[in-house]
Image (cartoon, rainbow over all chains, first blue to last red; front, side):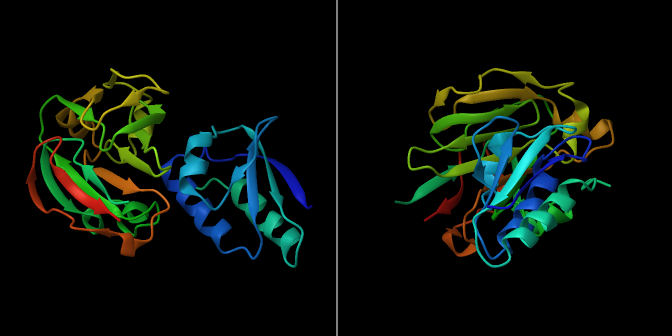
Length: 89
Length: 149
């Protein structure tokens, strides 16, 4: 199960606008993907409700994980790279 | 099961496409509507009955018993105000009835600060086809705003 832990670059974290960009990209991935805060329970990265409830702040470390399957590693990389970009920039 | 989403504010209901932010206007956050609020101190109220699963000064999410979440975002880019001008009435985790007060704020003040006070009201994770009966025009807080099948 591929996974990566990254630091969220968006200064104000995954508030509405960056969360929407992230969830849209997650939705395009061919496998299920989860997002978790450090030590926290993973949530469905394709759900706006789940991602917004997680309330990820800027500078927080989060872990992206994808279910095994074709395209899983690429899915994790694409989403991790996205989070490491300032989505508000 | 259908639910009716009430307007959290008094003002003018407008289409989401008219919100001055491309991510909301493009329904990227989800489908729904928006309210251009009356420029006077206002209390934002719960759009549906449910649990207040997320409460920030400028935005909140209420989740219905059947798991659906409605986001109310008070103004655009108001996360940058870091809570200034917003007074919390309810607390995260509270179970609310539709129409119950959550936050007091002043759209006129937000506007004077250079931000848009327009408030998107979003049915999170909903299919656009599941949203209809979207109201346009004058609304009072608590009036029906749209319908989520």
